[in-house]
Structures are given as structure tokens and as C-alpha cells.
Length: 248
Image (tube, rainbow, N blue to C red):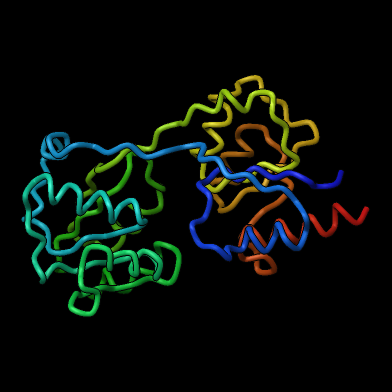
């Protein structure tokens, strides 16, 4: 079965020359973007009810751009001036660079992992006397608290935003050759919106082990996986599959 249409369950990339643009140009496929989930803010009153007082923390753990946005939003709502001495532990370079939206990067203490949360482990151990705050959504990968507990550091999780399933009812009678997922929440959204979903010839592409597990638990057939040593990005995995499928 040839691939002509792809639906990516995320917002469209803002950068002009994104890897998806190159995929579209090279393979002549149609790629649509539609967030299967979206984020809703938790207000400062709710955060206080979680017994979180921002002045009690000397370090912030940031796993995503959403975490950055909602930490500074809550700080503003609580009228808390984030001190210059605050340390920021960012899961990736992309998250660290995004901090520049709120702080003068070169004047702050910013520690950066390579890509996955475990990359931060040596840094947590080095700064084990800090009081860490982890602003997160209500959906958190289970390995994150496990890794933090393993280090023995003092840390607190705060739910600063929630992951909510988007309404996809307008897609009920729309068919795509490939559906692309990046989180278990995306799989959950598919099944909540379309409880009678039958995969048939639809190819499922998944990114990350937790998404693989969610797709398998849902009884879906996985046709495309990333990252792998050969295809570290989703666009590379899609391109490899399209090359094979469209040659037949």
C-alpha cells in the first residue's frame, strides 16, 4: 500500500524549513498536523492547594517548553520574583534555549541534559543539596520520579498544567494512510474520540518506548517506529518507510 497522506498528531512546526517540509517536497506526500491533545493551565490557587510555595525551592527541573511557560506563569500569578540564584535543570538543549524567553541566559545557572531525563542524573547527584521543584502536567512519565528518587535528592512535583484530549469529531470520516503518534496521550485520544476505530490498512507510526507500549496495549499494529539507530527521528523513519512502500 502506497503512502500518499499522513496525519501528525501534533501542532504544525513553526520553522519554515522543518524536516516535514523536506519530506513533503521529496516524497510528494500530503502531511496534515492536528494536536490530539492540548494543554490547559492550572491556576495558582490549585498550586497552593498542592502545598507548594515557590520560595522554598532553589532549583527547577524543566522537561519541556510547556513546563517552562507554566512555571513562569505561576510565578507571575503568585507574584513571586524568581531570584537570579535559581538553578535550572533542563532535559534538553531545546528546553534550555527556550528559557531565554524568560531569563537572560548567560547570567543564569543552567544545566542541560542531552535528550532523555536520565542524562540529568549526574547533575542531580552533583547538586544533591538543592531543593528541587518539578513543574509538570498531570501526565508524567513514570521513570522521572523513579530517577529522582534514585538520586536521593529533595524534590517536589507540582501539577502546573493538565493534558486534555482534543475533540477530533470532524475527522471521523477522513482517512489517512499513516497516523503519527508521539505520546501515550495521543493514542488515548484516538481511542476516546473513535472507540470503534479499526486500523485496517492504516499505518501507525510511534515515537518512544512509552508510545509503543500504549499502542500495543490498545491492540494497534505498529508499522513505523522511532527512534532507532538507523532512523533517530520520526521524519527519517517515515521517509524510509515511504521509500519502501511507494516503490512496490
